[in-house]
Structures are given as structure tokens and as C-alpha cells.
Length: 161
Image (tube, rainbow, N blue to C red; front, side, top):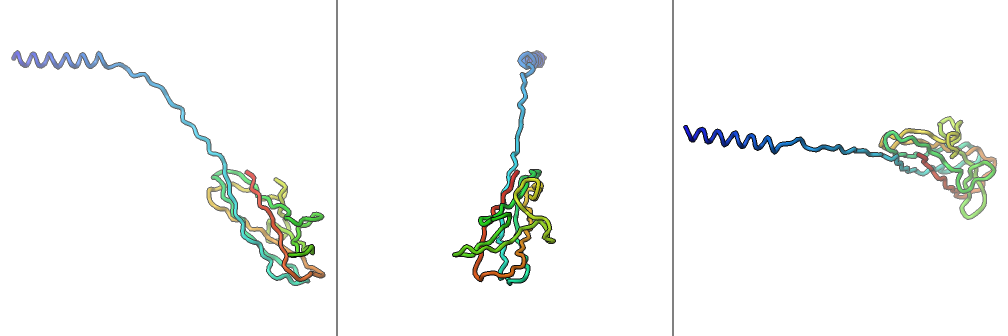
């Protein structure tokens, strides 16, 4: 019986001592924040008119792929090329100075010109995290006389976000 009493007293002493050591812990919080900046990238295919008959309108198209962060708003503009003159995009004959006019459009009806004036003649979109394809519609108007040869131009695609 004495042993049981001593064992019980010892357990009560440990329990009381543990309660005396236990205190409420001090606490603090950590504020956690993040900011996701918009990001975009762009690729473009070649717009090739192939062979241009002298008296026929020639149409062709290219694809631009814009990849932007989910929810990022963006605008895609096309500059007027390396041979722009008198409000007209032009291809230039390789090794010469002969120009061949052409135009770029947003639509297959060739009625909405595509330029690089923000909120005027650019394409506006919202990123979805995947490549979004955009078609560029090109047109060479009918020519009365065209000098034979190879013609080229380079148009820069700009994505503003």
C-alpha cells in the first residue's frame, strides 16, 4: 500500500511540475505575398506571296503566335517594314530599287489595315498562358507593270503588355 501511495504521489508531482512548466507560447504571423508580372513572347511565320502575276490581286497570309501570362492584356502591332514610303508598305527588288506595294490586314476581307498605332490599328488580346494564333492577311494589289525579280521586306511584330 505504501508503494502505491508513493507511486501515486510521484505521478501527481510530475503532473503538477509539468503544468508549472507549460506556459502559453508567444506567437507571430508571417505575411506572405507574391506578385506575378505579365510576360509575353511572340513568333511569326513567313508571309510568302509566291509568284505574282502582273495584273492580278495576290493574297497570302502568315501566322503570329502570342504567348502571354494568364490574364495579361496585350496589343500586337506590325511596323511598316523596311521599305515604307508615302504611307505604303513596299517589297523591294533584290539588288535594285524597284518597289512592289503590299498591305497587311486583320481580316480576310482585307478591310482593316494592321499597323502599330496602339489602340488604333493593332490587335488587342488577353493572355491565356498558351500560344494564341493570329492570322495576318497580306495583299498585293493588281499591278499595271511589274519588273521581274525577287522582292523582299521585313516587318517587325511588336507585343506591348
